[in-house]
Length: 295
Image (cartoon, rainbow, N blue to C red; front, top):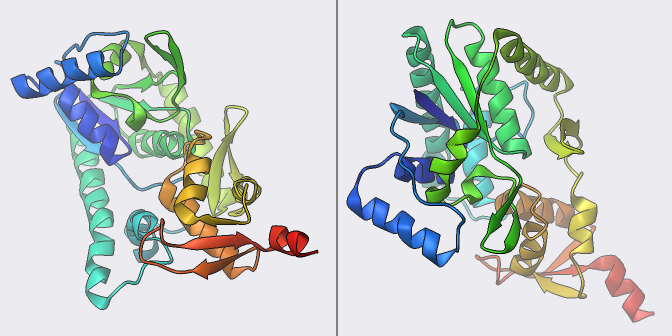
């Protein structure tokens, strides 16, 4: 069984969950105690390898192929952000994630040619749903078994209710229990999910989001009103604004929020009044709020 995930964090957690290393098992037992998880670590013994397809298909135009410079640089740009002072020597590093994704895609196709079975892990967020639909589109041409592990959005830790939309936000100790949600896809289902991916490609918008549990195409400024609502004070650091948005559990990355903040500054919605290399140094002001307070 070849496992497929869509983020480095999920890859690391799944690697721990499939490991027989005593230190790794000890760490997962620590997770259970520390976070009061309602499960016990259970090794996933049928995994023959893990592939991470971190293309971040929820962000950016879809008419660019996997090996285009645009798509290859996009994952790293979420970490650098538009505001970062890049040097010429950084260009090669921007492409590294893209090269890794192409290598992973090649491995996926090689495993498919050898008729290996696949298990796709995803949560109900745009990045992982896009990855799931995309993977079905790639694998539909092969005669292989495909099953899924969909992550429940609501879970409990002790007596507390948690809302977690991303697989990467789950603890490694939980994966052995989550794999019980495995479901085999029929050929018709694979074709259906592939068609959803083709529809998204035809719409070709710069952003995809989940609304009412449905993955849809939207304009790139879809989250801007939420970001503006994050300005509860006239002046706030970028780190404070990002933290408020991430607490909403929207299934988007902090790097994407930082990019939107920068773009909103470029369009004049907000204003940068103190610059800095790191997000806690950069201070932004809500121009409208600032004008109202001066009246």
